[in-house]
Length: 286
Image (tube, rainbow, N blue to C red):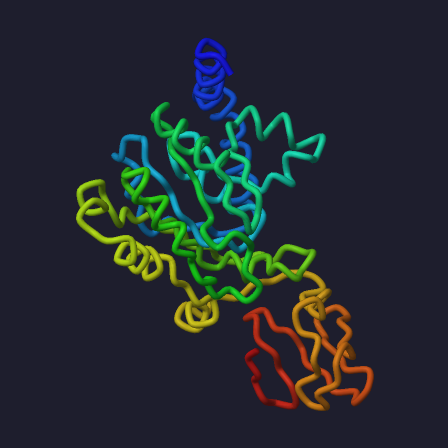
C-alpha cells in the first residue's frame, strides 16, 4: 500500500467517527427517552458527565438490549458504542449503526479493528461506550471484567466514567420475552482521570473498574423493596433454570404465566413481582 493510499484510508477512518447531525441525535434520543420513561420509573442518582468534556469512555454493566439507550438518553453527547459485529450483518440495523458511529467488535477475540476505531473516536473527541462484560448477564450479578479492559483504558488514557444500571435486569431478564414495569436507577460516576490512569498499574486500574461496576440485583432489590409488574412473569424461565430443585431432574421445568412447574415431580413455584419464588408459604430465592 502506497503512502498516499494509506493516508487516504486513515482520513476515511477518522472521518467516520465525526458526530452525527445533532438534530437527528436529539430527535431519536428524545423519542426514546419518552418511551423508556413511559414504561419505567427512571431515577438518575448521580451524573458526572454533565460538566465533563469529551473524549472520555463510559463503562457500563450489561443487563438488557436497551442499555445503550438507558445510558445515552442521559448523556448530552452522542456515544460511540462498541457493538458486536453480528449486529452489523442485520440489514435494518447496519445503516443505523454506521450512521451513529458504532464500533464493531468480534466477541471473544482480540480485534485490532476495534482498537483502531476507539483510538480514532478519541481523536475526534467522542464519548466511547463499552460493556466490559461482553454479554448481558443472566442473573443480575455483574460478570468478571477481563484484564484487556484495563489495558485498553491505559492505552486510551482518557477519563473513565462508570454507568451502573440498577433494576434493569428485573425489568427485563435476559431469559424473558416480556417487559416488566418498575423502577430503574442509573448512576454515572467518574472513577479515573488521565493522571490517575498513568500513576496506577494495569492491575490496579482493573481493580478500580471491577469495584465500581460490581452490582448484585437481588441485594439491591432487597434494600429498595422494588417490585416489577407485568404479564406472564415466569414465561421462558426454563431458559435459565433447567434443573428441578426438588427432584434434581434435568430439563423437566416448564413455565406457564407466573408459574414454573416440574413435569416429573409436579413441584411448582410462583415467580413474584419481587423476582423471587413462592412455594407452600416459603420464599425461595434462586
